[in-house]
Image (tube, rainbow, N blue to C red):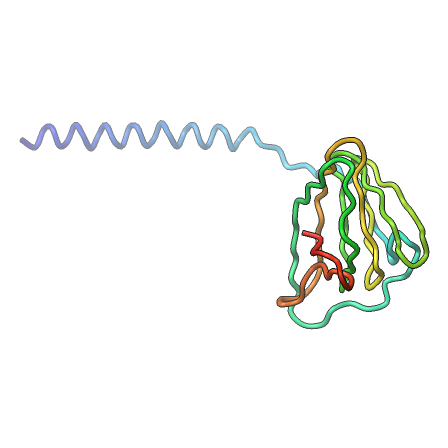
Length: 154
């Protein structure tokens, strides 16, 4: 009766050694190399030209969302209480600053720093616009605040 157990233990040991050999062989093929960096955005001001003048205090909280805007749609007017970056994954985003009337078009593959405390909105073009937005805020503070009488941005 000891013989089957010995065979089973030997079999498990052999399989484990074979598995480890595969893992070691795979890790031996890896090379250490630096990645290729492509700077998408580095700015001290928002797209409408206003400098970022303040930054939240307290515990930092990063929030990243994927926002899809249907074709031929304008988001409600809103503000952001802290800096954020918008990257256009697909489509086109046209930004509008309510006070100045300034407009900027952002295309697929481009990034833009959004305005802080300025009422603005974005609109899509002929196809859905998909955005990746990263906010650098603090816990308990909303990432987007609707302008008076407007719906939420999302």
